[in-house]
Length: 217
Image (cartoon, rainbow, N blue to C red; front, side, top):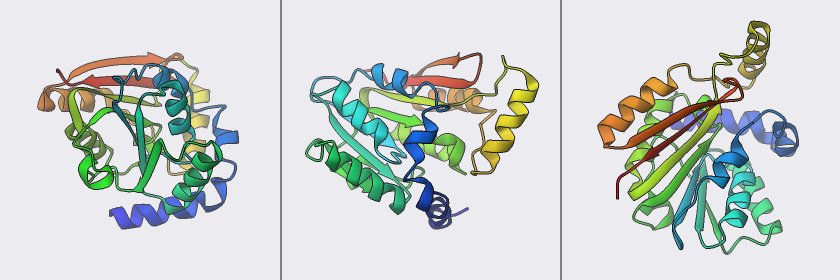
């Protein structure tokens, strides 16, 4: 699927859902707030969210880390409209910069005018990106020395009952969401190829998987 096709698909899915997205997703997108609390950007550092959606996570990150410069991009114009409105309503337009971009092909300099990012995070985005391996590679390339890429997404429900896993995966499939069974293996490959250090852990009995890739200073 091309980037343009993916953008059209996301706009079609979220044209209406974006208005209720945050209300409904808070019950099952687990681990997002933990990720934000662990970002710990350096004072004056940059934080970039890949696939920022409604802007919910960026707003929380800007409040949690008031000395950081926050940026976010999404391939869906519909989602960006909602994000822009939410950021403005939160009074954070001067601290959060939004842009339209493709997670598999982006550069911090082109989108935001910064050389590289101190922190990048991806919250439940890889399960929606067809070329999710390419998205990981692009984020690794955008990390500054000493920077870190934080990821949280659906796991394989390995510690939960099989019927729950089957029901959840069937429901997610209705929204073009595919938990990535090979995520840990691919992150190991990306870490070796980019000279990064990987920390990987399951959350909530495998409901979600969390990872951090760090570039040495």
